[in-house]
Structures are given as structure tokens and as C-alpha cells.
Image (cartoon, rainbow, N blue to C red):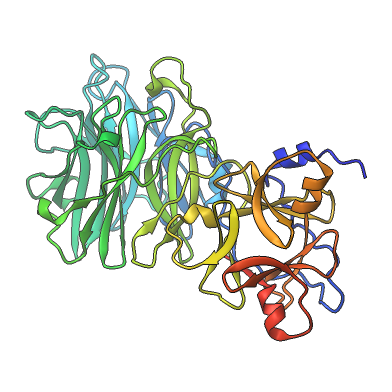
Length: 483
């Protein structure tokens, strides 16, 4: 069979490999397995939209805003699904004046529904000094934030007359808070993080409280920066992600944590994680991930962020236009802390596989060998994509997400993720026939392409090639749930 395997490999899952199921093994029904609703991981979701903010669903709609490369306006688009935001029409709801206040750079808008009104918090410079950045707020009484009728911007008055940006707001236990980045006089940093309680969506009720200062090595690369905060309240804690360092490949994300019962206006309530939690991945080709927000799809939390597809930048990275909006599912560790993994590269849906005889565990790779584990803190080691098989129609490959040059390969009864090779041997070892689960048709089973009786199976924490008989236990070990 003449096959252009290199072309299939480069497709990388952009084309779904499972639009039609091949014939099942003898005695197995051929009905397509039920699948969970897919979370889009198209990358990018929207090109050239930095500092992306996606709302939670409001009356069945998601809304997205973000910085445009021209830094001259505030835009909003809406869709009934996250994926739909990719092609949704975009409306300009406000444009900077030709001169004077707010005629400089327009950065990082965030869109929030508070009560029965919409608010957009954004940073703006002045016409005579575009870097005289301050925070402003737009307000609209309309149900649809894309509609005209936004009121003129108001200035958000914070603690000092200094560089101020990246504001967000959230509610917790009946109180609304404002969280932002600012350069505080007397502190030799570019920006720190501050929190205050709000009297209304346009005014603060309390003095600013400084909760984070860039001091760690990963926060002071190029610039001393803590900015772009986003809030997620889960598992008895208030989590605040933030971005640090220069806006090139060194840009990364950190994490602050407070107990949900703590006084959020007490700086001692907040603990900064010692290491960044989301960084550049040369393997996936994603550079400078950061300035994130969170949304949800169903019961799943979704991470929204920007990143570039390349490391090297000509000139000031602030004016490189190709920070693209990206999304991926956020996972959770058993201790209730978020597991961010790596910024995923281009491709289709990212999945995790759990054997039917151990549904609480997941398939992962460790030292490039596949096994089944629980509480996988290196969460990206358990991410895979189904892609077109290297033996052509009727086969699939299982591609590692954090090492996308590698695919699951079966050899000598052991499964590993092996680097791509344009050989017939590699094609046979990495191509499988995907069929409805032997134990449950809503799951999936993977049959070796050159041996109709052999399947990928779970065996006491290992993944092996086995020949399941008619017994329920054997068939369960060769069946995997997709999550």
C-alpha cells in the first residue's frame, strides 16, 4: 500500500481520525461508542487576540474579548459554544479617542456581568504618553454586550497615581472584590498585585492590599512583573493565577492560594507557589503562555490563555501581533489543587484514557513507557490525541500531547511512546484499529492493526498487548473510557 505517512503525521489530529469506525472484532457490535461532549482544543482558537477573557455562559452564550494588535479598541464576540467563538462575528464596542486621555495603548479588556449590567475593565494610556497606563471601566445596561449603548468610560481610582493595569473582579461570600496590577511608589518593580473590596462595580470600598511582589527568579526575567490575575474558587480555596516576566518566551504563570474562609484583604492569607505552574513548552511549540482567564464547559473548568507559535521575536515582543487565544481543559489533583499541564500544540481533542477495570486510574507515560496510575500530578503525561493511523484508512494512531513527535507503539508485548520514524515497522507498531469497547460499547478498545486477536490491555498497572477471551474481566481490561 502506498502511504504518505509524513503527511498523515503532520495532520496531527487536525482531521478527526474517528469519524467512522472500522469493522469490529468478531462478536463485537459495530455501533459507534458514546463519547463525552468534546472540549475544543483547536489552537489557536482566535488568532491575534492576546490577554483573552472568556465569560462563563450567560443566558446560553459565551463572550470573548482581548487585546487587539493595534491596541486601539475594545472588541467583543459571542457564541453558544467555546468552539463557536473561533468564527463568531466580532463587534467593536468602544474605540479610543484621537487625542488626550485614553488615546494611547488599550490593553487587556475583561468583560463581567454584575447584576443586570455589563462592565468592561481595561487599561488605557494617554495620547501624549501611551505608557501612562491607568484602569477604566465601561458600563452597559443591555442584555447583549455586543450591542451599542455603552456609557463613556470612567476612571477606576486605586491607591496611587501610577502605572495600573489588568484588573479583574470576583464575588466571594457576598462581597465583591477588585484585583489588579500596579506599580507602587517606593517598590522597585514594574507591577505588583493588589486586592480591595468594592463599593460598586465602579468604585473601591477599601484601601489596596498588596498580595504579591515579583521576587522569584521566574518572575523577574526581563521585567519584574506580577500581572494578569484570574480567580478560580474551588475545593475550599481561592486560587489566583497571574503572569510574570517579559512578554516573550519567558512569560509564564504563577499561583496564589488562600483558604476560602480567610480574610482575603489580609496579605498573610495568601501563599505564592514557589515554582511557575504554566510555562513555555518547546516540545509542543507554544511560547510565553500567560494572561489567562477561566471559563467552564458543563462541569469542566477551562483554561483560556495566549501564547505564540515561535520563540524568536524581531523587535519589542509587545508589538509582535501573534499572541493567539488558546483553550484547554483544566484538571485537578487529588489534593484539590489545579493541574495545568503544558500548553497544548495544534491538533484535535485531547483525551485521557481509563481502563474499565480501574476507572479511577488513567493511562500515562513515564520514561516513555505506558502504565496506569492514579493522582498523576504530571497531568500532561496522561494526555493523548487520536490521529490518522500511519497505515492509512481504517487505522488510528495515539499521539502524545506533551511529546507530539511520539506515538504509542506496541512491540514485544510492551507499549511505549516512540519518536516518529518514516518506516513500515514504525507504521505497523503505531497503527491500531479503534473499535467499540469490548466490555462496554460506550468505551473504546484498540486492536493491533496486524493481529485481529490482540488488543491493548491493562494488567496490574501496566499496559500490555493481550488476547482477551470471552470473559468479562478480560474484556474490561481491554476497554478504556475516554475522558
